[in-house]
Image (tube, rainbow, N blue to C red; front, side):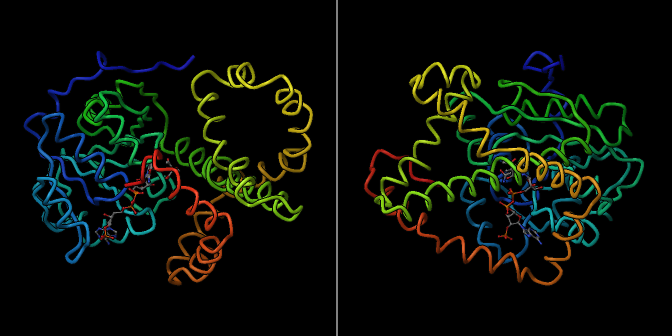
Length: 332
Ligand SMILES: NC(=O)C1=CN([C@@H]2O[C@H](COP(=O)(O)OP(=O)(O)OC[C@H]3O[C@@H](n4cnc5c(N)ncnc54)[C@H](OP(=O)(O)O)[C@@H]3O)[C@@H](O)[C@H]2O)C=CC1
Ligand SMILES: CC(=O)[C@](C)(O)C(=O)O
């Protein structure tokens, strides 16, 4: 069984007196920066001039500057920019400031693993990757808890990289939940697979297929939304709390019988075969190449697909229903 690291395994003092630059103030950036600051650490924010987030970060009490300025002043540089922009910003604004003994930090291994960023050998390179969307990284911290994170060391120039990674994980609250050690390759390939085949892609398509099946059969879209999307959170919450067995214990036996008989017809041998193909295309770099080329072409396919998804009936129905459920926590 893998070793989990907790509060006692991490020494925040290693980061006291160091300047941490968080590049980017988006989903992860705003959360990690605020958590680190609330943990008593010195945090700078690096953004591009004209960023809509510049004032938001200043209003949150941060010193905000360009990425280059922040990299020059920082001992530890956490790159929380979009994966597809990191290598260009690294080459233009970070690389020249990576003096010996500094640390480069990531929350996803994409650019190191696929060779888009090749740091100098005299700096630490490590990862602290929350296994959670950024907004919950912040929300759980403010509630006195944290989200699990993965850590990985790519370069250990100072001999302290892992200890610094654990200290950083503590600073964002993750040692309250648990920290697992991995490698840049394992985190990258499993994270890409998970977000494509299970969490975002797989689940979105499953939800839409169920919703469309019911709506096309003549049932009310609102009922289809509640059954196929709204209630999904409640079921997944049970899985999250106590595994599949806890979910099956909590739902009716009718539901469990249906789960165990019909589930394998929906996610069948063909599905599993396709999952293996998806993983192969991640491992051999096909996905990474396609994503980087898509961005170089200014995202024609991404933008067309995003527009189509935004106009799906399930989005319209969901927006209307969420507006009617005042108790729902509005997204930030
Ligand atoms: N989203 C998540 O929950 C998770 C993300 N990650 C990883 O965290 C990293 C950051 O992702 P995420 O937080 O989602 O990113 P977001 O898209 O939410 O935020 C990106 C930030 O980078 C800024 N930015 C974009 N381009 C540039 C540029 N050229 N120069 C300077 N700043 C720029 C944006 O500001 P602006 O556009 O205003 O300039 C924004 O502040 C990625 O490696 C991702 O894989 C890991 C785990 C979970
Ligand atoms: C939240 C998370 O880790 C994801 C889905 O992989 C991502 O947003 O990159």
